[in-house]
Amino acid sequence: MSRTRQEMPGHILLRLLGHEGHQKHLSELSEDEWAEVLRIADQHRLLPLMHARLERGEMIAVVPQQHRDMIRAAHRTSALEVLAHRAELFSTTEMLRAQGIESVALKGSWLAWYAYPEAAERPVRDVDLLVREDQALAAFRHLQDHGFIQREGSAQRPEAMIGSAKHLPPLTSPMGVEFEIHMHAWEPAIGTAWPMPALQDSLILKKAKAAAPGDPCRYPDAQHMLMHLVIHAAYSHRFDVGPLVLFDIKYLLERNDVSMANFWRDAEQGGWLEGAALTMALVERWIKTGMQLHIPIPVAPELVDDCEALLVQDLAIKEDTGLLAELSETREKSGALGAARQLWQRAKGKQRASHGVPESSPEGWASWFGRRSRALAANLGRRDLHETAQRKARIGQWLSPSP
Image 1 (cartoon, rainbow, N blue to C red):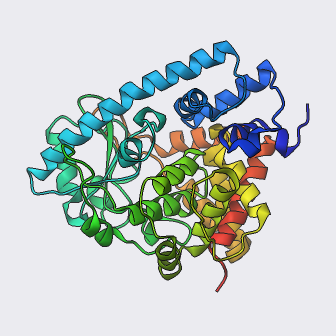
Image 2: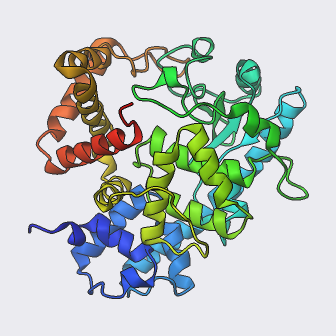
């Protein structure tokens, strides 16, 4: 059955997560609707948060019992996982410190324990550790010497990634927790096909601080954490990061003394004002933060609609959405020839795992090209792929205005 945007499962999910004004007139969902909404919620790691909101009475929908059981189980699993992540984070931080390498734990490692009402509400997929660029390779090798394993191949060898990549290949700890050693909090300009804000790594490292007694880690201060969340969501990922970012910002603002005047000043001076305004317009539409955001520039409601669709997109089309949006943006700025060059760069296998590790063989060009071509061909008939790519391209134009 054809549905309007307001009736699509992803939008229903946002309404369930939004403040009571969005939930008020949400009609009773059918079994099929619940199954699809929760499938998307599971993709985006939202089930533990949904359980907590149900328990606190913040989600007023009546959820069928079989789905309540699944949501509760996801919360329980998340509680165990965040404990395991924290234990590994602490021991790894101390291990690196013993070698004279100071690290700063980014995003979820702090948000789960110091922003959210319960750590289990904020699943942590992996642990991101920011270190000085000149210490990144030493940190990577030291972890390997202590049993951390690179399970998958990478597009470049680790030593070749210094200076151009955001982080080195992921390493898995002996306890099964994935770590990324970051040289940068977000991508350097040389590492992306679109403009990125100037790097702020030195300042983030300098102003990072401890969070609580007994916690050996250092974390970005609240202003830098908010900056990082915005740039990661808007510029690094063009809003295909999932709805958790809305709650990341909500709880960060509610539990920290953040100056919005300083935030907007930094955004304007740092070249990320458009991304900050769009992110905060999205938060303002859906989430009650308890403070005025004072967005300094107008944001078209249609752009916020585009962000919503990207937040809850089906992750099965995410990679192809990015490719089509990138080609569309390149064609707009550089014409058909520029788009053809960009496609050729992709076709050469820039992103493939060309450098293997002991546990795996490197993926050859023919294998990579065949796999990606088959996946793209399978998705090209999906209407939502093209619609989502168009939305992503429009957001790209907003984030990279013509001079």
